[in-house]
Image (cartoon, rainbow, N blue to C red; front, side, top):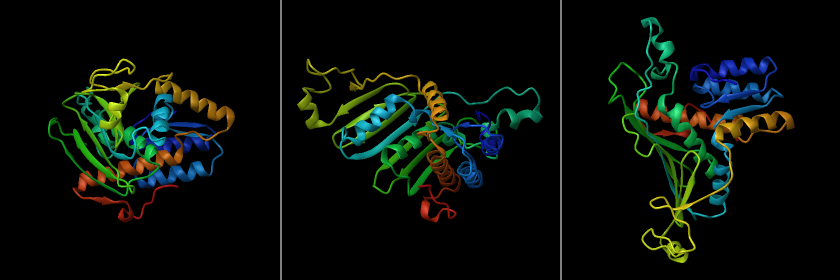
Length: 297
């Protein structure tokens, strides 16, 4: 299991594969295009299991929601609105100045992808999964606007990814306001599904509301409705990280490809690099013009 600073993932994972180990590598899978490509090549040459730690790919609730969306539950997808807001600065106490970057590595671009890699990557991975696509354009902004403490990675980020189907996916992370915390909102012309870590709700659009007996957010006798949240989507499921480890074990035992594998992990890692480039250079990043790098099929 690779659970180390972002910049070390690729080298450690490759060394583990060379040592004959199956590898579970936490998200984001690898830093930089060289690290991504080297790890993909190594896994392609290996007969060992490699699973990327985007654990919501293993969540039986999330897989059920993906199936519902693909079956037309919310109709034609219009947009994703995703956030992961927290109130905290990531800083840890440092006993000696020379240990600053080693302990607070998340704050320095040499080692870290900041909020995009550490948080948003889960939700970017989900959008790729639902759409069965990878983005063709990214724009965004951010800054060190609250914690004036010498950090290089941003304390707030705002990204928009455009997909070939026309869907736009927005991702926001704040570190100075935790309102509504983690949330994924998938919006379609027949309704919206809202996901938290372990719960999900369906909120139908106008005509569908009447069909279900819902008026102004109040349900009819036959429809369960949680005020302000919508109709609960219920399915038996384990905590996502636990389920991901069970799935990793099963992939090793049965010699099967993980659902969150090297290719899905690599594509999300590329999305992270595109988002960072968009913010750090204040430019629109188009995939077909971006350093000659292509997504993996």
